[in-house]
Image (cartoon, rainbow, N blue to C red):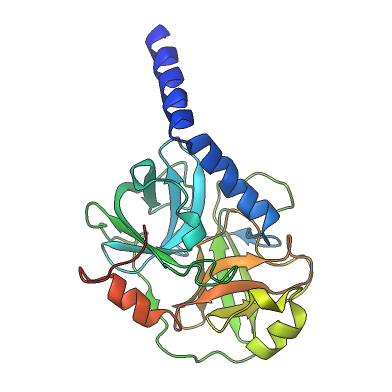
Amino acid sequence: MKFLILLATLLACEARELGLGKRASHQLDIDVVRPESRIVGGSDAPQAFAPYQVSIMNTFGEHVCGGSIIDENWILTAAHCTEWPKQYLKIVTGSNDYTKPGAEYSVDIVKKHCEHDKPAYHNDIALLHVATPIVFDERTQPIKMATKDSLNTGDKVTLTGWGSIKAWGRYVTQLQKIELAYLAHSDCESKVKNAKWLGEGHLCTLTKEGEGSCHGDSGGPLVDENNTLVGVVNWGEACALGYPDVFASVQYYQPWINEMMTPEGVACS
């Protein structure tokens, strides 16, 4: 017992020395101060509902962000989800409860868009490479990515994630799902509070107050009716207050994603 207490103390000290406590706090600050990203108004997802969904966790057992499996080696997520050094990140797959993983994978490469937050809230996209290939089964599968802009206003899209289900609430351990509606860029621009945060690389959803994303869902997948990944959770106003939720457009960033998945693709880490 004394050894375990000593080990826990040493780990906490190491985290403080590396600034990880500050990083973790900063990540929460990002998700609270910046427009937020967690599911509100959703329901528990059935088992194997979203086999492409992963939890990006830190090695201290905390859920950090969501992400999507796009092939056996790569996870697509948001750039603001890469605050932790790669050696302190792990990917949990194959489970609707991230505390009971089907499998875990360490991260050996982080590729973040070099223009992230230039300007503010733009280019919020990143790739994580796992050290060993992901093993696919019924509950763990890659998702195909959108290669063209095929959404029309009102089209149904599905968001999944482990974020809080109410403002200032804790992250949930059971995967949540919610059906949202695509909102055309021109309409989104007129409905967000600050149009300067919205760029051509974003897409939006909006249904009604009480339905949408909040913190903890950042980096997670938005999927269309053809089971195609169309968006990555970026930001939104508070928690489902009747304003649009904003995502990085997978179709828009497809050239960047394809390049980064090759050895020649050089990005910021």
